[in-house]
Length: 445
Image (cartoon, rainbow, N blue to C red; front, side, top):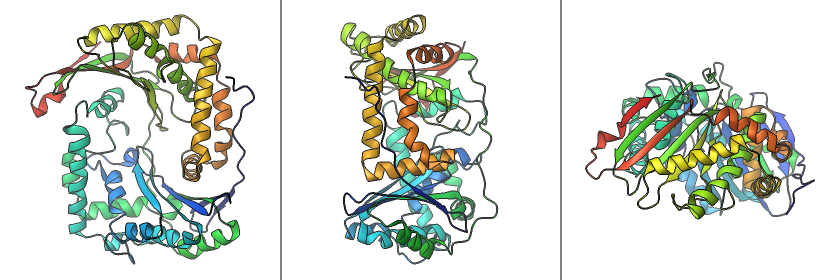
């Protein structure tokens, strides 16, 4: 298979700003009578202040709990009643809310989104805060604290970034900070981040651009801009960690596992595009080097469709991650040594044409698959408008990936995948491990 000459479709968009600063991106697609409504707020865990972590994610929950003209639970009820699908997510650099609705119910979706953008604060009560705080704390217990290997992403972020860096804490936040959050804290966070001049609204699907803009103006135009938006703190960090940091974590896990994190260029840069290709060559899918060597040849780790990937952080640096779960009877030391040998062979050698062809083919499938759906395309436009200021960058994303060469992959691997630029977490089985044992034993080399 070859992807020579392949490129993504060029999507025509309307890109408008309302007087209050709301950016509105519209891409008409009349193939089916539905429309994806997607709104990104330029706020995530990176924007949180020390001692107030977890508020961005908490709002993902609070935004469904009623607003000025919508009762508790009615946001979900109204949309599901017209056959909509909907959800929300929070990440370090943003929070997004989205629904896909029959196109003749677009006005309902816009009214609901506008009502919670402009009218949530007055409806927030201590009872609502307490209820949703408990939901988030339980989510933390289930996904992090009481889950085998559950805390590995938190610990990599903690160790891979300098003290006080905005990426050093996780999106879920700490139990203590969540417990300490007052109703006034929550309302102030909303006021300073949930505003039209801090948001991108994207509509993709069966809409008429002029009519859709009129509806957006009708429902969002009267929401006042925030005069004192709080931007993200400086995320500048050295390109390299500067040393190897190791932490051993005895925990209630079935088998040993090794997680390795490298500080790497941020999402949106040309070298992050190289990281995307490098990840596939090294650890993406059954044709990758790690799958062939560590699974098929040596049988040292359990099969995975993605041994290597990257966090898409934009504020100064990101993280390239390797995830190795040991096979039965294999020590983490042996698995790590075999992994290091595969990385060394890449750094000291070259990437074959067929490896690049495979990586480009898989990334092409991924990008085109994402853009083929109305919801994925809407999310991509919101993402590129929010993070990089230009929704039209969606049209060049695939071209940038396909422009990455084998020499680029080796060059970036040599600069990023070094032992003085990595954190190594080693989980070892310990049935008697207490809840606090996840602190582990840390060694800096």
